[in-house]
Length: 338
Image 1 (cartoon, one colour):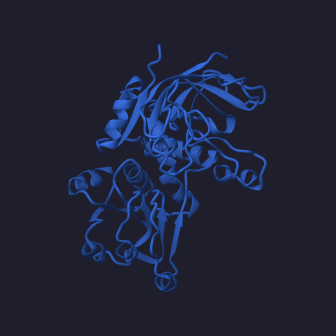
Image 2: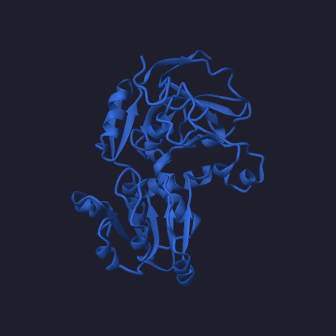
Image 3: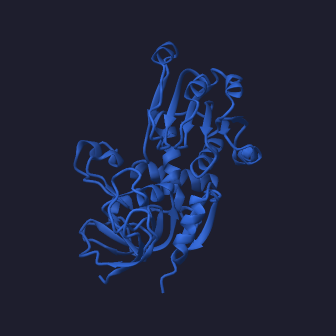
């Protein structure tokens, strides 16, 4: 195979520049995908800036990639050339450990992140293990579906993990790139949904996205007004909150679930947990099986992220748009290599 053209940052926090790399021989269990679209996730920005201390450079972002298979290794049998697939946060896992065999490949200790130590989807082509190249239902718009592969599965996974019923009362904290997808999923799931937002101007939009109720995440009195009512709260933001006030909104056996990367410690009152038999938990993305289930659910209910488009050649402008907090709600780059 020839070298791959891409956009890369050569050091932490720098602008993206054209970058070519040689991917080497295609592995027997790999597929190569011609990228059509690739979403930008806040995690791309975090890795660009090395916020988590795991970044490697040159850094080619992009873990919400959509494209068609153009080559497949000799051990790949269920994907065909020309088939449209998507690659999310992971591009591989060992497939042999107990965790992988148990169906939790995303938790594998040897899992290969698509954008850490691996070149991502901001290129003309992308490689991954066949298991992580997820077929895309034909009814979903390939130009919009990319963010489901990271943000979408991140907020969908708790519904599967904890057997959330349609009768559940669920809160979503943060109506942004993750939260807006959570509202859409929960509405289709059948739950009674409460949106927590710090932006007064998002109240009406939250209702349009699926929220039955909207509460200020900055007003402890508002949260006291729904005390003891929520079975699950999904926290999608990465900033500190009024945790004690938020915890009071949980019903007995309620769960506060983190999917936002809050870097500061979260104070938890052990006695409140004990007396209410409550839980605090977290989860990353999801397994290939879970991603497939989510995509089928999205196709059935016509759920797609709300996206804005930029040509991939304007990747720096797109990141400026993201940094400025102007994304509404996700950004997708359209490949324009010529």
